Length: 156
Image 1 (cartoon, helix red, strand yellow):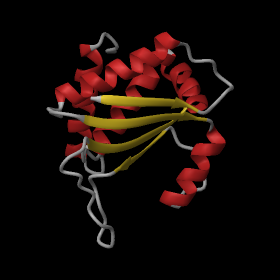
Image 2: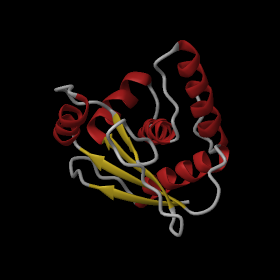
Image 3: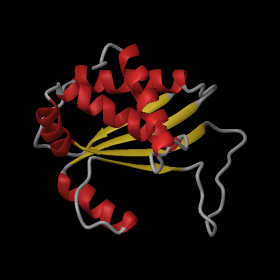
């Protein structure tokens, strides 16, 4: 799987090692979920102002959040399906607020790498259709996230 990572925030320096961890955890998530063949995902790291704007525009929530996912394989009733039989499987975009991840890492008492990896996997699973709107869905998503993170040495 190909993952492009775009760091659009400047308040928190993120070194190559941390970006490599994010790439590795997304590859592990793809393997764990059986995403076969050529697939692409985009991960963009932003500040709270940028994610607040996206959250307001696309979800109608005028507040920052930690992660947003925009799945290309998921369409609404008035949206055309995207398919390129000759190209890569384009899964979609994951947007993470780094300042929110920093705050949450402190609140949960773990590393920034663990929090960013958790948010990346969470967003990735949303791209594949996982949801946490029901207790069963939340439990399934939580179990998948923790299994993937444990597999790359970032378990609880």
